[in-house]
Length: 517
Image (cartoon, rainbow, N blue to C red; front, side, top):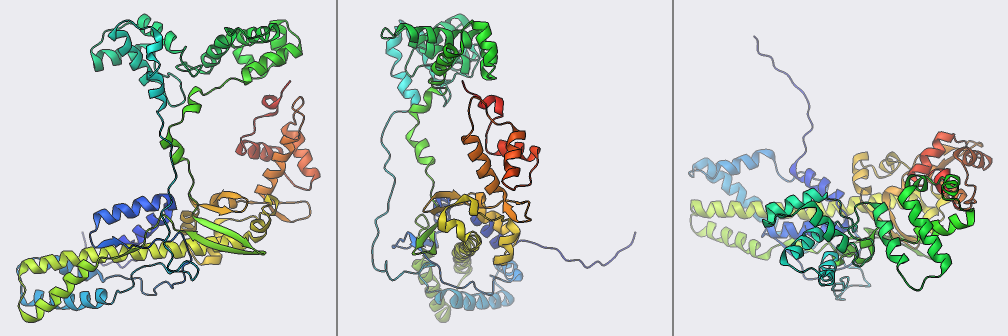
């Protein structure tokens, strides 16, 4: 055994850097909630009165990013013990540091008012949401239509309705529902009883609700439609053919083996087309028309950036409607002033020193959080500005064919940021343009070389591929080999397996599944 001395360099992230990275990842819609959490946890941080929706940031990043020396924090921890001459010196230096750091921190906000909006008060804008019942409440309101005679049957019906998922399907086995009734409500039921009540529930509105799978859902809808009295003879025959297809030949129908279906049913192509049209008009998700208001609100996208075209010149702004104006609490600053005055006239005790240390820690945390918000806005704006400059022609015209090949390294080189930082900014962020709200990640793509040696974006190739599929004859859709030949005629040097990969990324099925009668 021996002792050795080794010198090595390691990289450690400070708490402030970790906080900044986490703030960079979250979108504007989530930033509001994150700031509210910080306001609740830190009493030294407070929200200013004014709010502004679209703000341009024109401040500079502070050159000195070190908030505090590492040894100072340990000295503060030691200062909580019995006061000594050395600790008095620590508190004396702490007093001077507190007074210098926070008495001069008079900037009330990290936002600056534009000339056009200065002095204007803007009312907070919220999305109006209509009050309506949920899907399960809608089903429970119809229990009275089932002719259930006992409380036991009603309890079983409520248990079944509660097991229906958000798509309107019952994906639990009958035995599992029987077990739930026994353990949760002390009701001993049977598979036959649950199955009988389930058949009644499947007659409720919307049609196809509480089905166990897609096949049963479509069959329920067709059965109810066949019971309508206003159908003509041709429609009844088409529905009967559709029921036979789903009952006996569902696998051939899902794989679009139309010649086999004609042979099995003994019908011609015109009759088969009417039967398939009757199936395609059905709703595969019965609960889709009863989406909760909360779900609709969650689907609302709040853009993080706004790009506007002003006479051929692009203008970039950050959407900071959900980021309130933050500042350090004046009450905590007054506490520092009072402590400074009392320190000059009388000797402070241990409890006062502990209190002022707590205040200082909270003010430090508040200042770090405000600085992190500043740095987040600067980083996001510089990154988005670089993306806008790189894809300038696209943002002017909206033509997807003008998108240039762009990877994270290209933006990192333009901004001087790390690739991981650019990736965090681009993740889950949206930009509002004149051509719609776009996801930032959609602007990043690899390059593909044409016959002339020009580098084009893979997004351009995908757009042309999508146009080819939209313009094809549905009776004879193009195969991947045919699509490859058509792209090569356009000058794109591409392989068949690459065409298949792009087609899958565009969620375009194979040629056989795109075929229609």
